[in-house]
Amino acid sequence: MESMRDMPGKPHIDTSTSGQSNKGVPEELLQQWESVANQMRAEIGEASYQSWLRPMTVRSMENGVVTISVPTRFMRDWATAHYQDRMTELWRTANTSLKGVEVVVHSAPSAETADTPVKRSPVGSAATVREQHRDDLSAPLDGRFTFDQFVVGKPNEFAYAAARRVAEADSVPFNPLFLYGGVGLGKTHLMHAIAGHIRQDQPERTVIYMSAEKFMYRFVSALREQNTVDFKQQFRSVDVLMIDDVQFIAGKDSTQEEFFHTFNALVDQGRQIVISADKSPSDLEGMEERLVSRLNCGLVADIHATTYELRLGILQSKAHKLGAEVPAKVLEFLAHKITANVRELEGALNRVVAHSQLVGRDISLETSQDVLRDLLRANDRRVTIEEIQKQVASHFNVRISDMHSARRARSVARPRQVAMYLAKQLTSRSLPEIGRKFGGRDHTTVMHAVRKVEELREHDTTFNEDVELLRRMLEG
Ligand code: ADP
Ligand code: MG
Image (tube, rainbow, N blue to C red; front, side):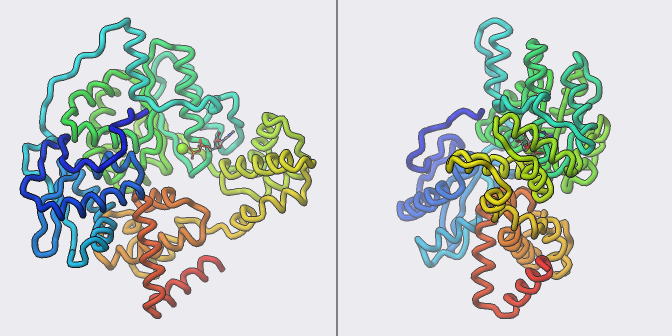
């Protein structure tokens, strides 16, 4: 778990972290920034705020353009892609003469190359140090995600066998193990199962499990705190490194670079690496060629979409665990109707069971249909984000890759916003999920896109017709 940083409160304007001060900046500007930063904090959440906004230093306002500086190029690119539009919008409500917000890199010595001495580990027995180190770095494991609880069927038997192999071996059977498959098909479950199994059977091995997103945040914090030596050291003394949802760092160049080095160092020392992603290494867009080829070197195992048999098996197992009497007819009905992924399937079953307990009545087909009406409807009309991206790209004559790219030219940004808007309208995906499907964008970017498209639809008839046409084609 990431340690809690400072208590929430006022945004940290005099950023001691970056060693930059606001000397000479008009008080009025600082106040506007404080208000913008506070609103952003409410929108993007504490963790993102701490990682991205807190290191910002407001510099000046000239000709209506506010300049904000950040410690590294990477942060500048990220902030520009994810927060610049929204900051500008918010700032404009405080100061109508504002034309734009520009994010630049501090001219101070680059943190990216700064070397700092390695901090000493606390004294203690090897085991406590190892545990402490692990708990500092690794995300907690979900106790329910074990091999026992994983229902095996045709679509996942290969991935399951590979995962078991890695968990049971005391050496490194293949490196890396790369698990991939669509959302909600059990990648995280298998990763936790591997980690839990090794920790139990071979406590002397340090297992670190974390999301790629967390890896990136940590890396960025290390850059900010000029602690990159420490960062490297931490990862490079790990026996088993597991990074979940690695598609998240595709296109994030400096994180990818660091990951690549960490990866190589560990492989060279014969340590095990396990990675998951939503696509195969070769299909991950924005991944560097040499990283792709290294990822392809080990064992690549995919989890396919569920089959009816697997869904039914999972439902039976879960119903049994819930200790609920669910008629076979209802399980079959669910296995037939809820096909998107296992997470949704589980959710549907939980709802049906919870409802029956709440009203104190037995579960029947009728009540199940009733309780799940919205879910069933969504599953009937199952348009995927990928389909939306494809249709929208072809309609506006841009490349599908532009849906994920960081390009901000209006000719690609607008179609991308339309696709995000349609994804929100036509699928049941959450804003963060949609953001992830669009090159790992923040949920606020999606929110902004939705608002923007709504606004345009009101004022621009041609545009409105375009969007309506797309919607009908996708729904039809
Ligand atoms: P992913 O990481 O691929 O998006 P998760 O591992 O989070 O998916 O799985 C989503 C949910 O479905 C979890 O609660 C997980 O326990 C459950 N699940 C997925 N596949 C299986 C399976 N084969 N057997 C039992 N539960 C499963
Ligand atoms: Mg997952």
